[in-house]
Image (cartoon, rainbow, N blue to C red; front, side):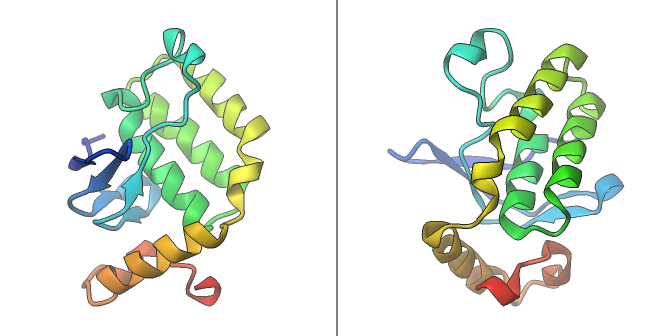
Length: 144
């Protein structure tokens, strides 16, 4: 799995995707300009799991975040893809299993897009609507 092209957003704790990030084997394409906080790994768990921006988790985390924003598949499938991509990317199986179960147990509260998520999706939509890859992004147009 190739690495996403990211740049830090000053004073925000976020990174912006500089170019589309596509993983053909799972039919996902995350648009350039998408903002991410990396893998949502609690500070204490980072000792045992990974840093949120570790190369083994960054690509799968971006795809997972995008799936939680656009709902192109049911939540269970998005979480299953996260696990499969972690393993395919070379992440430790036990750590991947722990991450998978964490998103299954605690990710439900992040599934619904709040007003801030919708605002960000609207901005991203405007930035990407003329892209030749627009249909691959699976924007939740009805929700915007």
